[in-house]
Structures are given as structure tokens and as C-alpha cells.
Amino acid sequence: MRRLSPWCMLSRRSGLRLLVTVGLATGFATGLAGVPAPGFAQTGGRQDWPTRPITLVVPFAPGTTSDVIARALVEHLGRSLGQPVVIDNRSGAGGNIGAAAVAKAAPDGTTLLLATTGQAATNKLMYKDMSYDPQKDFSPIVLIGRAPVIVTARPDLKANTLAELIALAKAEPGKLTAGFPGNGTLGHITGLLLMAKGDVKLGQAQYRGSVPIMTDLLGGHIDVGMDSMAAYVPNVREGKLKALAIATAQRWSGLPDVPTAAESGLPGFEAAVWYALLAPTGTPPAIVAKLNAATNAFLKTDTAKQMFDSLGVVAAGGTPQDLAAFQAAEIAKWGPIIKAANISF
Image 1 (spheres, rainbow, N blue to C red):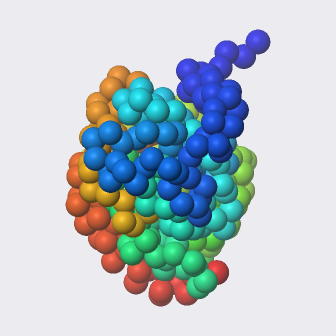
Image 2 (image 1 turned 180 degrees about the horizontal axis):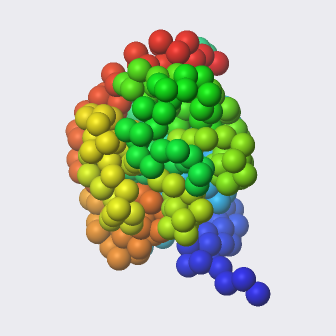
């Protein structure tokens, strides 16, 4: 019988807890578009918060990296805050469905969002009819972590580094095909950034997630894949795929032999799927501060460190102001790339 990893077991245990506590959360927590329950108005967001359960909306399906991170986080927050923290998976529209629900929720600290790069930054640049603005409709709490984009290649590709890939693409223009995990995803726009920085043209194959990209890389049907690295690490470690570069400023300890993009001749080439905790705009500063402190404490635990290592995520942390500045920088960075590629939904 296949043994489950600790994180799978964690997810399942948390899932059972979700079933047990959802009735409590429904009865006493604020509805996503509701009003504060009796008693909260008297607290004013002071030190006695929270007085009832908290809902953390994950805008993706169970089992995704966002969901695994969220389930570990709510275990810690529940103990730290003294109230149940339950997960509500609301997927769809690139995460916009879940994010929009939180944006409309009462700003009382009982409804939070675990956002990724899309909902907190890049979706704003692509979706024409978004019902929320990530900078105006959310109060930043903390940057949780970053999952760097990795550039991988089929094992027999005549390029072992990012510099060699660019040289090969220039020598054989239009012959190399790169796989991306969907139009407008961070892997996709990272590929566009690579083509712009390297002055090369790659064929683009869009997939629905990481698994089919790896399948076609292993089968030799495409040449290169660009995606957040969590799913690719096992195949890279086993030598089934080649890792050409990681789009970070520093090498990742989990794959110490894989160079950064900067080391490969593309200084400033950085891209990562990132995870952040957000609350509806207007959430009292005292509540934001308490959530920030609790999440920063979680990031220092052995549980978080081991989980992030297994997922290929680099822990972040910091202040709400740090997150706001990072969010603004990401929007400014990706805006010209997305506009030039005319990506819109």
C-alpha cells in the first residue's frame, strides 16, 4: 500500500475538521457578504478578537499547493487565536470567484483570503470584468512565501543551461516549443519575459496544469517547460528532466546545483508564484497586526519549514507594508509584458 506523505495526511485530517466545524462556522461566522454577528461591534477589533470562527477562502480546489499551505496555516492560526479557522475552497475564473467573495465580505476579521500572484496582482492586468481591485479592495496582511518558476527541458535537448537554450533558440528560430500551465498563468508570462529578455521566439503549447507538461517533456513532445517548481523537483532529482535555471536571485537549497537565471546571463530575471494573506479593506489595524504576528510565527515553525521544502516554496514573512510594496512592484513588473502579449480574458 502506498504511504501517504505527512502533508497529504495533514490535508485529510484538516478536511475532516472542516466537515466537523463547517456547521459552527456557518452558524456563527459572518457570511461572505453578510454583517458582523452580534457582539463583534463591541470589540472594535481590540485584543479580544476573535470571538467566533474565522473562514479562510482558498480560491483553488483541494489538493493544490495553495490548499496544502492553507491547511497547515489554519492549524497554527486556530491554536494561536483560540478560535476554529475553517477553509472554504472557492475555485474558478483564475481564482477570481473566491477573491471577489472575500472582497465583498464584512471587514471584521472573520473572512480572509489566501491569494496567489493572480488574484493579488496579475489577474488585474488580464481580466476585463474583474469585480474587485486587489490593491483597493484588500488590506494586506503578510506575504507567506514564493514558489520560484523553474525552466526545465526534455532530457535529450541540446542545451544544459539557460544560456545554451537561448543560443539554440536563436540558431533554430521557431523550432523549439515551450509548455506552459495555461494562458495567462505565471509560467506563461514568465516564458514571455524570457523571450523578451533573450530576444528569442519559442513555440507556445498551453496545458491545463503541470502534470501534462511533464508528461510531454518526458515523452519528447515539447522541448521546454516553465512553471512553479514544486511539481518538477522529483523528476529533476531523479534525472528524468533537466533543470536549466531557477528564476530567483539566489539558488534554492533543494536543488543547489541548478543555477539562477542571473547566473545564466539574464540579470534581474525573477519570477515566482507567491502566496499572501489578505483581508477585506477596512479590517481594523489591530486585527491585521494580530494575524500578521501569528502568521509570521507560523513561518518560523519546523512544520512550515519542512512543508515549504517539500513544496519548493521559499518562506517570506514581513509586515503588511512589505506586502503592499511587493504587490505594487509585481503589478508594475508584469504589466508591460502582459500588455505587449495582448493577454486578456
